[in-house]
Image (cartoon, rainbow, N blue to C red):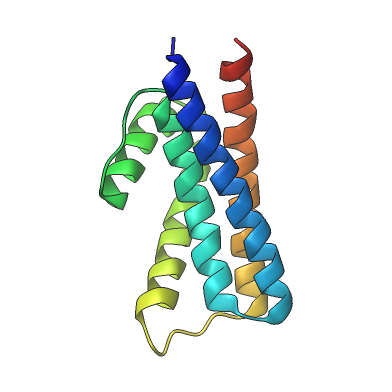
Length: 134
């Protein structure tokens, strides 16, 4: 059973994930697709950290968060395995849009990224609310 502190941290991180999705929606309206890709990725990253907070796990490396999340929640099918594909796609697009000066992302691509991020956050939120209530 997670401690009160772990639950508080988890709730904070889930709120951050939802804020990042909201921000991505607003940025999409003005057409800054690279920033939408970045915020979509970080929404998912925050959602993963929200779940892992219940285990008392955190890492300074993104790869550590992703690996532990996959190991504990996707490989065990506590959360849908398909979310792993969402992580891969968001990582790839975020890295391209953040670090490659010539990376181009279309509105359709970034809209799909944002939809996938919304689904990811929604799935983690459903799981977390069950834990918070229990």
